[in-house]
Image (tube, rainbow, N blue to C red; front, side, top):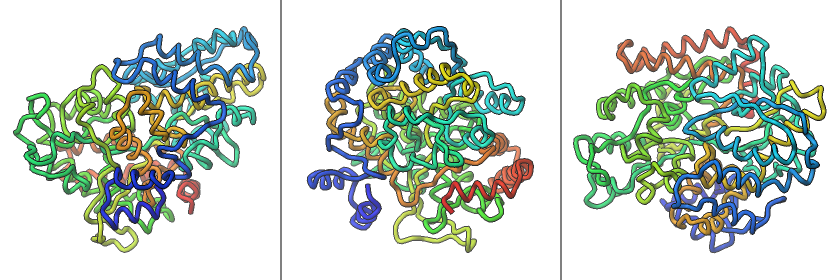
Length: 547
């Protein structure tokens, strides 16, 4: 929604659904650069009947998609490829693709989608499959040792400083930009995201941000939380977590739990979940920075805002499920929340698409969504004081800036191989196939303006109220005037990974307090900045914040 609509909603205390319904009656709601809600959008290359057809594979409520479904969708979406590639044109070409194998998604889907592409073009793809926790170490080792052994990589924008910044990527050809229609991206994912020094390197396949998912059966009149509505602030989240402790889950009859914090590291990706709490405390509306001081790169991770976030986790650790110290974010989402354990979680869009289309989900009928919780108070790093605004401070976490497909410079000297690599990447980033990936379990969430057509989702089998909640939480986060934006700077996952290590020590009691834990993270971050180069990091950090 537009900033003025958001601010109006805050002033009038309107729910998102009421606001969207009112706006829809006037035509549409613009969400961060033209996201249409409930309005038909006809994207380039996309065919309405094709989009409807693929959204019925296998159908919402028909169980988890299989490899046969992925291949079928891939075959139906080959139209753009056939416009620019002749049948058999890439015969004899072999490409190596590096990506994730999380939850049997990511690379597993890509294999299925690309099998028909391989059959048509004659190319062969070899796969490097990585667990989430192994991703950053594997990529950094390849860069540090000069042994990049992949032609195509699934990668997030935060790594662009480590790759494009070191000349390791191949610039996107102009024909690819036309095939994938980059103008359809929500504005937050347009340039400079995906670019470096004015050159474009990325095909976006995801629109990462964290949103708040909660169990509606835990709240309302007579609920076990005693709260009339789901929490909207972290203070209320803490209250609800304490209130349900020792009670029974209304759906499963098992032990009830409140907010699910992941306490185990995840190769740097687990740090995002502390950010979810910290951003509301630390991201002041008048200051674009919240991780580092932009003039000095001094870490802010040990200021009172971040210490409060760490303290929140420590205060409710005893109320989490048993052995939560060994639960990473994959566990909290897929083995706990979707399976009926716990009542609240911040996560990427997977929770929304999986809730209604995965065999393992039991919460599809009782799950609701909103932007991440806010805070009754916010820390002003410039004054060194806490402030209490008239309404809660919200700062949705734009965690990871979405996955993309990149081509490395290993193919730059071989035009046939280069075209093949970019064609494979463009197939995965096409408009139609991207809609299917947003609607079904894939590891990805909506990221195009054309993904926000409620009618398409409803025709696929989603009910309107669910879609308004799920898509609305994404659109509201993308467009929030105080969104916490991720910096694209070299070494960002070095910072995140060492933070996870120090947090683990703090959660295990090796540090005496939340402040000592935060101080240890800050000290480690200072060393990383000095190793990379403070002056260059300051310049790149400021650029990433638009300063």
